[in-house]
Image 1 (tube, rainbow over the protein chains, first blue to last red):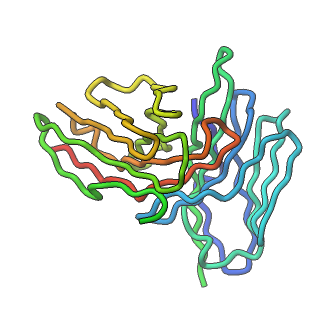
Image 2 (spheres, each protein chain N blue to C red):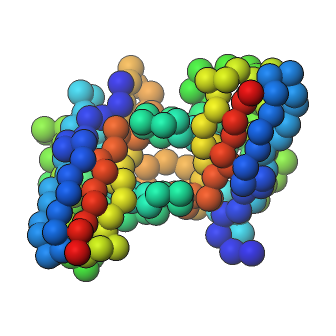
Length: 112
Length: 114
């Protein structure tokens, strides 16, 4: 079963902040975050490999809570270019086999 | 060409046709992937190749047949598809296979099965 992302959709004004969560029912080995603009390919944002890890560049950062089987993506002072659909990609163990599964997606729209 | 390219970008085929999707990566990567993206559904991983060997097949129907002749090229051969197979098919590549490696995606092939 794929990780659940919340919220499903969010609308922001430029300069506002947003948090996107990715929650799994299985123990997570790693989390990737991608953004996909309409009609384009998904673009890699960042990887988190260790529980407790936090990463960021520019005004986008993420955290990985291994025990809670959750990752969060933080968008600070959002820009118009942040609009798109955000996906988490997770590697989780199922009966000793690692599977790579994408989350349900979060549609983000930033308005001027 | 740079990055990951896919051809054709759009394809319309009947249920009895046979067609192939092509993916090429110019990044020197060793792993390649096929994904299916349907409307309002998460990305679904279909196949994974690492060093030209198939390492994962996520219960994909046999009407989809992948081929990886070398580390730069990946094909998806299609035959007797169903209308529900209409979707965006994305190819991706990464330096290695596994969660430590970021994936680079191609622009996709928009497939419509009539």
